[in-house]
Image 1 (tube, helix red, strand yellow):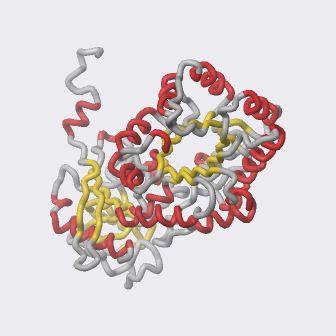
Image 2 (tube, helix red, strand yellow):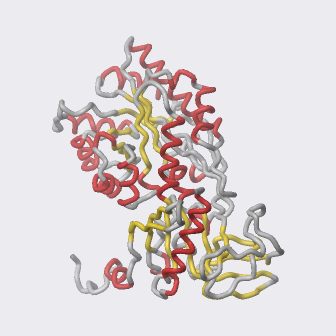
Image 3 (cartoon, rainbow, N blue to C red):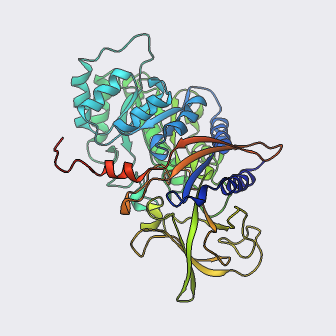
Length: 454
């Protein structure tokens, strides 16, 4: 059974259960566990070959402990960038030796914790290296555990993609040390020459809006740097390369493109030596593992016609699709309209070529937040909508329901995982996060503590 068919079964099961009859929580996020499994397998198959591989999931894409647990069970590692994400990774069952700690603003406490755990550590700048020098004097490494990968994050300065705010390899990106900046190569050589425990380099040149050739160019620059440092030292001091993640996702259709195999092929064409087994490789994918597996489903509350358009008012907006609301050209989303029983409405569609027939209406799909730009999509063709219909927001498995925006004190939606029995289409649910209550919103906002400074 394909993922599109599994999704259809899940939507109908939600409707039959009466999920959207609840005025307190008229939206929900759902995640196809089989689709996640399939993506993990595709990644592992694409990187098959000699040498060690550590594939990690970027926790920021799914700050949900049960979902991170899926990846731990699959044998992956976890890339974290904060104390909260680190705590989630440990709670989800990742061994510390399979955790990678990144962040441009690590505190002394965070660095000490990473060193004590034996997690891999990507150093953002020279001042951070100096902190680690001092902290390592007080942290004993357990010889029974494998030595962690520790090394500098390199900004290859190979250029930005089409989304400037997401680009990590621009000339002035805040991440890592600029490879083209004066004195950087000398500093790196001296640092690695003086510290035998520095054994890896890190680069994260990928992001949404980047071409595969641009990503590969960043990886090539860091591979060449590793070769240069090792040659000058006369031995293989650097034996690990963390090549990051950032494989773009196609949000225009259900097709998964580019694939992990295409990603590897682009790198291999430019850096054939990367896959010969001499270097251990680490990856840090997030969006590309999860986006296609997730759907946000929300009830239509009202429908009105303004300025020649059908405006569909629903309960999913900027509080779950923040990037889309504020930067719609960079983060477009597909929506589909469904009847109250979860079946796809047949007349018209939100995207051409999805098999629907009949003329639709020019439509905006709006959320509940109190500003005009709170739109999931604008000026698309949809069937005539009615109150009680359902809107499915596709490709939202990464970031969209795991990192909500607390605008208007709207509650965080519940999230479920699902599997579908291919024999009878029966849906099996797995609880991931329950919907936030008004009482929890009050407590989180300081309710009942106005007179206290605790």
